[in-house]
Length: 252
Image (cartoon, rainbow, N blue to C red; front, side):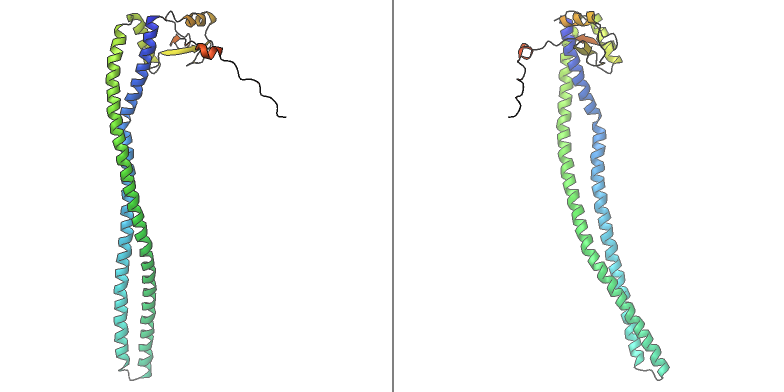
């Protein structure tokens, strides 16, 4: 294989790996934002559950006060009933007593509902707190993994920079200029394998003469359509000579 072509293939692999590493590093702030959003959502869920518990507690406290007020009125009316002198006064007091008793019953029913609700709200709060704890643990694990990946990506970029410099130093300058010009124009992909007479990236059929020359891997040739530098990967001898599967026999 042409020495420059071999170096270009290796250079493309390095550039592709470096590009993937840089993209992962660039995506870290957005990923961190997503992790924090997950935690914040879980925190808000807990906060909302606590707020519902507090509202329930305050409502029950208010109902307790209302019951005390109505019981005070009931006691007052009963005392007044002991001192009435006319049937009209008696009926008026009885009406007030009945009204107070009805109000107390309504408040006690409401209190019972709030007490039953309190159990459900307490369970919901406990669940929300458990979810927050689990989410916090998961996010911490992801951050730890991300931190390790960050170090790995940085090390990869440093290693690639050294290897790339060594490759570039041995390349023909015109060949390198062609590679870099195509790379800039084609989103970092300047090389394309030719297979079956086709450029495997743009999928355009190559001229027979071009493909036959590419098969030799002894020169720098570009695809007429996408301008990428072409190379050929020979089929391994074992794969080329492997026998085909025997025909299946019909079931008897």
